[in-house]
Image (cartoon, rainbow over all chains, first blue to last red; front, top):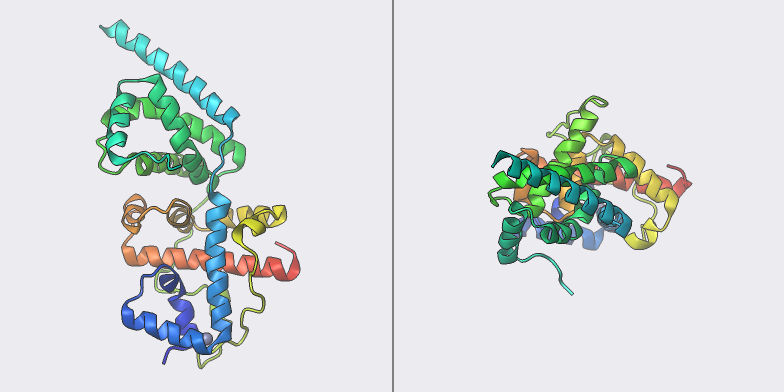
Length: 86
Length: 206
Ligand SMILES: [Zn+2]
């Protein structure tokens, strides 16, 4: 039988849908009977969502404009170099 | 509206970038910079991350000439950013190796008794949604702090998999780890974040 510790070991695989059918079923059975593990899985999933939210990069317009400037500068340097060598 | 670059238009975008077309660069900068910034943010503070992303775009002008499109533009750009960040950190930090045979963080493993049941179960439910939690500036800072202490490969795995929904195959390629080791890296890193949020919710301290 799957114990709480065993479940904790494969919890990420469960969340990501990486378990095979039999393993998946035994996790589901355990979760039906065990409140602590339900909390654990929920919290681990929340941690994973938190990471996605935390790192979804927001780039402001000012920052993008500065990149445009540097790219434009580098492009023109490059063009001059190319025409020099021709 | 879905503005993501479609495969066929990605190919033409790459051609335009190779020709040095400035309109194409403006478009690509807007499409890919947020993701690149997010990758850099996993390694560096905000201003260093912005600096790295700017530098990367300048490198891309030459590097794109040799880009063959096998990995997809996004993956390729993220790899450039990640490598640059790692190079910057390399001098500052030594990589702590992950023990791939241990799937549980010691701090979590200690919370089970000898029969494998919870001795110290999770007390609180993280009921707030991720967005609500992120509005808490102190938690966000705490997360930054913990991410910065993760072993480099765990952090990279998290960053590529969670934040950018790269496929596992992609992540394995970028990080040069096996699929099973990637699963361990991800799980270990998530547990650390779980433990961090738990402590934060219980004590209000990082
Ligand atoms: Zn249980």
